[in-house]
Image 1 (spheres, rainbow, N blue to C red):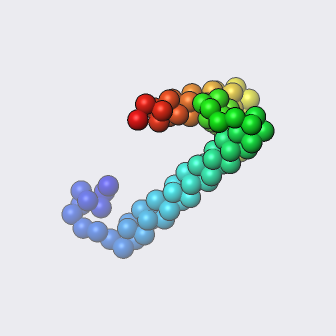
Image 2 (image 1 turned 60 degrees about the vertical axis):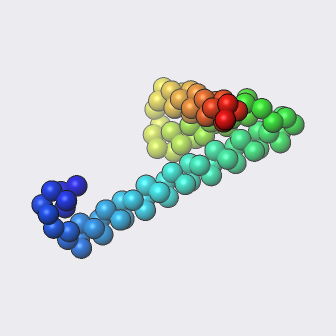
Length: 97
């Protein structure tokens, strides 16, 4: 942002921004891959395709990503609940459209 305010684009600032974007993209791509794998795995185990797979896959992904980033048990549970809630909401919105 400081590059734009100053009115000049430096190659160092641009390179730093691109590296950060690539790192964030890789992180979110990995999270999405884990979620899709979890949801599909749960679907195969349960033998049915419904919103519960999204909820369980989101919860498992939230817990796994949280556990990889920190070892705080309370935060892992909160992130698992948030992951399940977000995945379930997204699944219900997908059914509406």
